[in-house]
Image (tube, rainbow, N blue to C red; front, top):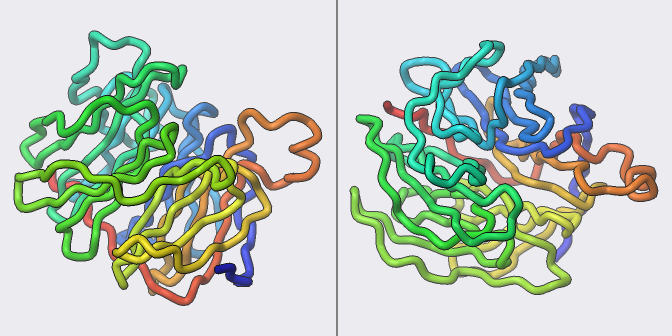
Length: 290
């Protein structure tokens, strides 16, 4: 179940906690984050990397149909413009939980933004998955998470995948308009697998998952069969997204946080952005409609 596709570090940015890659087709560029390093990065199609500091920690980023971005931050859901001195907070449903922050988030096929929260210490299971609708109404969908990651959506938009990385579980939810079905366990992993982190879905409906402390990205069928694994030169890949003009490139973010001097010597590109051409295409990202 291994794949020998060539993996290249295309942006050696040494992120502390690289995360949240998203391809913005209207710009022909990939954006991603360093949550704890407080940065937004942009990789243009000609290979140029631009970076901006952020005034707060940003856990996720998605383009808006009206321009700019929406994202989950440690202060709530914000309107984000790279380079701005402050990001206006649209709402914070967890003002009563000051130790919580927003982590990963994505836009579904209907243009709604989904993002989860987590206790920043990762000790408490007080994270919640929220949906932000087009009218900017925020709805709590599911709770009791330690480390929320994902989500990802099937090609039709009828299934949402969402992780609790700390518990090593991937859940699936059936979506039908505004109705969200009961969560069900889709995949469960063990100690040797690493921790399922950020993920995406390809045009064939297969789920690609980055494995923190797993040195790899894996591909699973819609039925949960492990199809292939792409080995990486870093222990802590964090998320993945398809991009490029033909959506045939898989971009993979990574982290250097928590690695000691010996580990960093063995992984000189830890925290970098990697790219591989896996032989399958992704799906065009839908901008947030709100």
